[in-house]
Image 1 (cartoon, each protein chain N blue to C red):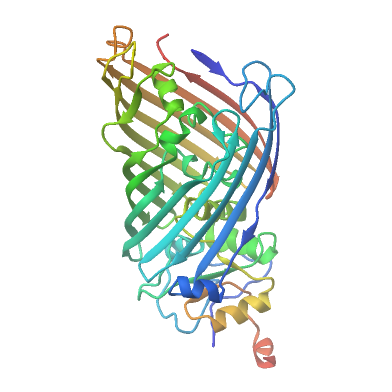
Image 2 (cartoon, rainbow over the protein chains, first blue to last red):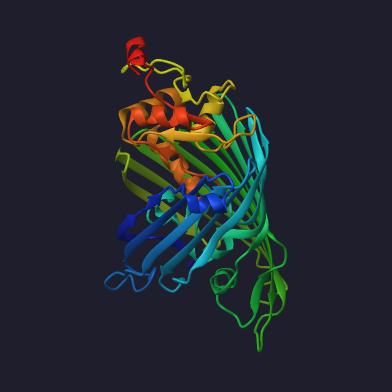
Length: 327
Length: 128
């Protein structure tokens, strides 16, 4: 697909969010300060598309293969240490089969805390700070729609960008009317068949693995708590391909250098969101077909959301992506 | 005893000091810190003790007024911020109380607590 304009016409998402705040004796034993919480979510969606299938056989009579379950726990372990973990189950057509997965599990060491600065390090499995919405993509309440814009948050490479195992530095800088949030993650992400298919156009007999940890850094400037949000993300990936038996392509590397520019304006009853992504992809030594075929993929979306009251939103979105911008 | 800061009169713009804190909280709180605290991004006071944030339900008029006028944030934006922290593992939700009376009681009885409430008149204080 060279020029994809998604024509999802009809979605129906029933999202029930069960929010339980627990401060019981049971958790007092587990967490020193007795300040723990449990939250969860359940989502069931229906997808209908006019042509290409998405999340099951959506182009026939529609598909209900879109179910998400999640539960998380968090607690303050000491003055400076915070722990959290979330397990999710996701069933989305051929992408995910519902097997439970650790979405994140981390310890957060808050090293700096004064009037204008907060800062520290998170260790473990952390959500990648990619664009405005990647880190909250798994719960319906933290997405900007039933599905995230595929131009930026392509579900096929969700594994690669969802989370990484390593460390994440963070800093919050508070000014009188604005805040700057900086997060930088460095760690190993999940690969898999979907990632191979995205970067190699199909699934070859070998394996695509990370040669170096993924690096994702994001800056978000928020004016007055989110009235205006401006964001910039830089992601760097370095992968290598290990050929399999009777493999038509040889050992090689795929590097990507990705930038996302984000803007969002949130009025009381409406919002406008726009993000643009550009990804330089560099293939080396893979085969005659792939060598010297470096290219730039890009995509963008524009979304207008109306909010008649706090718990109800309607939106319209225009979403475009190019696998090869020059094609 | 709770330190009560400023008066809420319907229709009057709140100042940024329209919050209440537990008596053991002695630090001055700037407008940016107040925003950071109620956004649930700041977990400790400057002395290292834990901050416990109490809020009214999202649709409560006092909550909406406090968010908009004291914090300068729409209540739905604050809810989205809390959701994002909760479901990315980077923070927790505030503790929700059902009424202003419960707010005063919980803040008064929880070390390190912060919330918000209308300033009581002298007569209302004398009745307690």
